Amino acid sequence: HLVESGGGSVQAGGSLRLSCTASGDTGSRYCMAWFRQVPGEEREWVAAIDSDGRPRYAESMKGRLTISKDNAKNTLYLQIDSLKPEDTAMYYCAAARWRWLDNPLEQSGYAFWGSGIQVTVSS
Image (tube, rainbow, N blue to C red; front, side, top):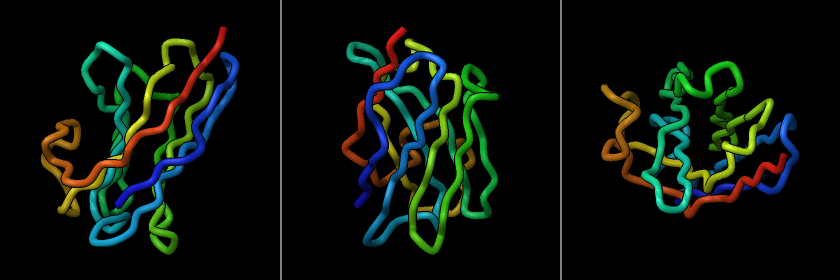
C-alpha cells in the first residue's frame, strides 16, 4: 500500500517535495520509483532508487531531481527543483518486490502503485 503526498500547484521556478509512505509488504527496503503521466500520454519514468540507496534519474529531468528514502519511516521522497509548466502531471509512486531491478525504468518491474498525486506548474 503506497500513499503519495506533497503535490499541489506551484509557479514555474519553484520546488516541491513529494512523499510516498509505504505500508504492508512493501516499502523502502525494495527498489522504488516515481513515474508521471499527462492525460492522453503514456506513463513516464522519472526516477528510481534501489534498496542500497543508489538513485537513477530520467535524463530529461536530471539536475532538477533528488530521490531519497527514509527506511525508518518507510517513506520515499522526490524533490523537484526549478519546476517547469511541462512538469505538470500526475505523479505516481511505485515499489518492486525486489531490492534491485535490472531495468528500473520499466513499469512492469513494479508490483505496487500509489493512486497518484497531481502536480501543477503555472507559468
